[in-house]
Image 1: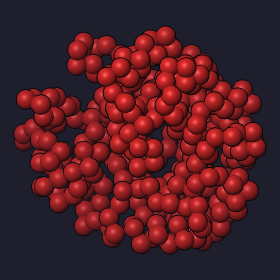
Image 2 (image 1 turned 180 degrees about the vertical axis):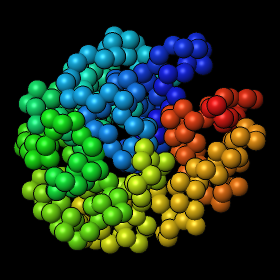
Image 3 (image 1 turned 45 degrees about the vertical axis):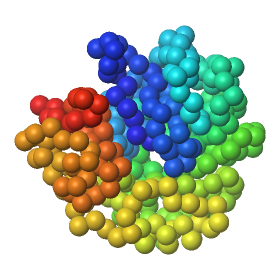
Length: 321
């Protein structure tokens, strides 16, 4: 899910904000995001991460964002907008916040909205983490391989994490959780899209028995250039292989683009060096969809390579240097 400029409050420069959006989500509808974790504090350092390289690699939950401030800001947002769902996600791993259970309960007490948690699933082997999430309506962990070596190559996890433990955590959650469990599979060309990889993952997913298997691939500038997307045809093949519960959530064209993500990023940076651009300008110049241009631009903002500013009601992107 795209992350807004969570640390730039237009009313008060420098003020930390924890609520972003609402943003349209193919999985959840209109989603109002809540970010409890500082940027790039995570248990993984994934090749494909749109936010960039992890700067604080940890597996120890603790209090990060002050919950009183978070809930105050959320309440203010809900007084002016009505989203379909409140989603705990953002620029770090949300289950690293030791108070996420309290935060979920507070949202439920505040409104009748559904609550979703987007997680990498790496801490679900801890019973206390599983218990904190049980009041959520939707939990969406990521599981992209059943092979330990591939797991380490794609996710570059904290040294204390083992794939067997991660899988066991998702399986344990499935046994006690009564809400909707949707497992995201992020597919990277040359890493986890081969026959043996897919066969092992399909077996594990069958054991977990999630409500949905959500197939994703790289659609925004990744943290590492080695993270390459699958084209639509291959994604459709994988969907068929995983069966009726599988769905493609990635916004990708029917065939490979003439320009890959690296080339698109370079072209965008060259445009912005010369003049401020809107997402519409970038889309027209690069022959891509407006939504994709906006995701690419926002990804570069998150990484500090671009800035954004609003002028006469329009968002313009300028060079971050």
